Length: 290
Image (cartoon, rainbow, N blue to C red; front, side, top):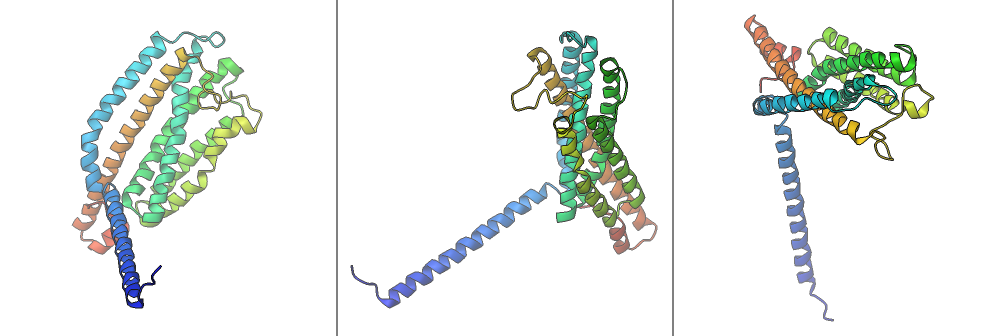
């Protein structure tokens, strides 16, 4: 085999190095473009335009799903052979419990956006989800108490599942009070985000409390390894109600974020109108007028 001349070897090595640098540069530019295109959807103005188109369809889907679910619950689902008609409480209780935890997961994701990227839209999403999460948690606690009276003989027991869900409700209230106290400052947003991340420990406790401790609350019946333990005649209406409740949460959350963006823009304009300088307005409010 003939050996290559040193000059040719040097030329080939130089060409390969140049090609590698160009490829790495192109990959880096491509990743920057991808990141920018993804972050573009976090632009408040683009979010307002996007939700303006999506919300009518989302409202229609919410109404159809909830109407279909309620029809199935009251006119199709048979009474349970043990619980009788009281089993119909499950179709409100279970979806509200799922969404109580889902809302906190949304808040946790938004909190990461606040702490990592410091984006004001993530802060608005985190703030508005707290109120919705508290509402669904309250519905879960009330319907659970009403369901527990005929089943357990009492409205409340200090059960692991019930206690951890009550802790979630108090956590929501604490975060709402914190945001009311700190206002719309970046410091308040960071503190609320950190507290949200700390409180996330309650979510797996709620989920696995029926497995870790001996509780009165029944174990998981839908999302479990061996498949759902509920009859199909009851499972499908429950899933329809869960989809309808999820669509309701998304609708209300998008509306609340839109209102929060517009409220902060009005607050910023008011600061400027009364003579505050532009720098002071930016320090006091997250800038959403992009």
